[in-house]
Image 1 (cartoon, rainbow, N blue to C red):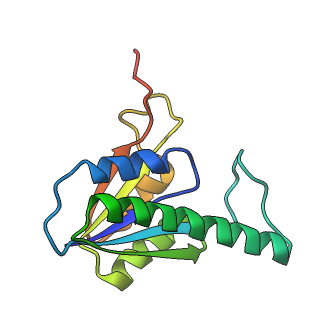
Image 2: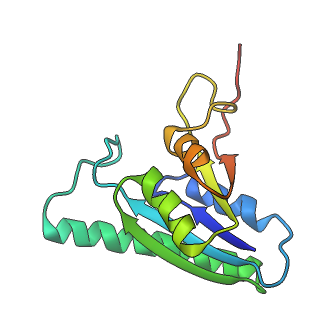
Length: 149
């Protein structure tokens, strides 16, 4: 089985990897950890990056996040093949394209939506991936918030 693990640079990526580690995987499972440098996003974490040195710094940071996730997966799932990739562009589009290019059987993506009910409403990226992907998509809620009505 080929599993694309889509992470971002938020605190929730660790929780996504924790969830994957807790499962039983068959020998020979392949994981490709992917993050997307979405320079068009509007985020409270960072302003758009415009200078070449800053872009390089962001790229190295994202590679480091992927390597750390790969190391954790490899430590806990020793019979798996694990790789990583950093792409640039729109996150939804690049995650779906990476899954198609790699011929993934499944995409695992986190949702840390800040919507009214984060336990049931996926984020716009995870929702878009779920609608566009040609393979199975599993959305894992990475927030601890509870829905209160």
